[in-house]
Image (spheres, rainbow, N blue to C red):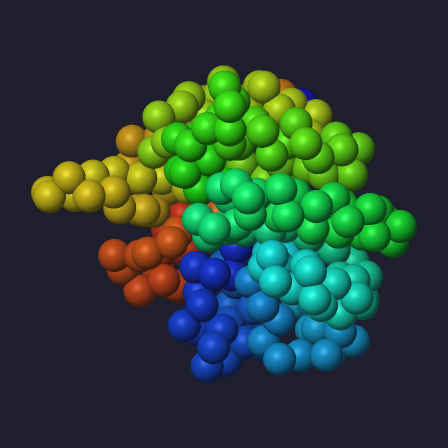
Length: 253
């Protein structure tokens, strides 16, 4: 089994990147992350971001790009992601109107067109789930499975978020196996319920997700990168991503 890389989804540090984008990436590299997944580019031009990543020896492993930008600004996204050497452009979320008919059909057409155009430049399109894709259905299929059944397997990849698969009532290990070979990026995230029964995203190893089983399944499924993300942190976010890296060093790296 090939060793998977460890990256950070920068949405976790959205407040920090908003005030000091380059300094935050520098801190991420110092903590020990090998790669980053973008949720915006800090206002940098493509060549500026390329130079920053090279300086910090960080790899661009993915970019989260909204449905609107896929539809209206895809050429800009292609220019950026070619410059920074990123192979995966991921739609991270769909509002209700875009994931239920008649909007879902139009959404899937945007996805298919984006996947075709990205593929011409050696970039694969992907989709990142939340819980609703494992709860809502299209006919007799879960929305998650419907989306990926509609997209060409050679041009559209899965970015599975094991936290939200779990919240959606499914077994993440089973779902990882189901999409083996199509799952280059896996969001590694831990969750627990607070005293009021609400879901909290927590530092790795502090929640209820069977992370060792998830990591083993991902390795067997051909995953390239484990992407750490914590939607909301109980500690300062830099401290949280440092603690999650500490867990990985003890339990995987």
